[in-house]
Amino acid sequence: MILMLVGFALHGMAQSTADRAQVLQTCLDLEQLQQHYPRDNRGNIKQINIMQHGVSFPENISVVKNGLRPIFLSKQQINSTGTLAYFLFHDFTISSTSATVAFVYHYSVADQFVVYLDLEKNGSTWSIKKSNITIDHETE
Image 1: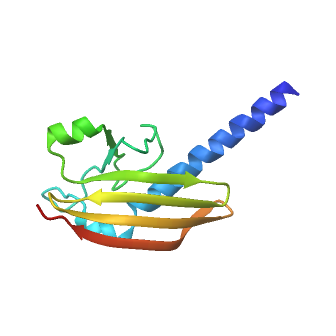
Image 2: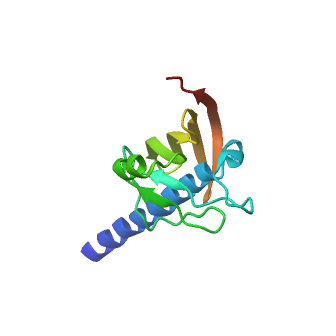
Image 3: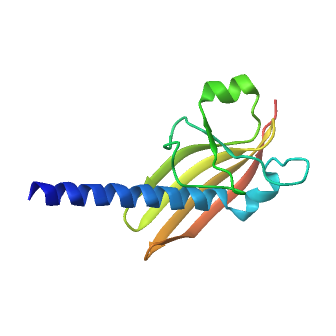
């Protein structure tokens, strides 16, 4: 009986890890953000940065962008390296059939996208049910 309970718990954790990865991948793949990702000299998207502050992710989470895994940085690393383009997640709540996500994608010194997403799960696929994506131009 105990082994069965442990098995169910591990299955639930594995499923939630896969769900977290799929929802995070959906965020990285948002069409509105693509043209603002940093690029190399050939025009290919560089490695994506995610700040580990507020909401944190395991560094081995199974997501990629342009064949590269994201770099997970602390707030101190973002500030000390002068990194301009990065994701900062404020809310990342997932249930068995729905998810809510709120994040900011900073892409320049004074510009950022503010993103709110409601997602739903159909079978094993997550899709955006409702979104609110705005550009915020900060002024000094």
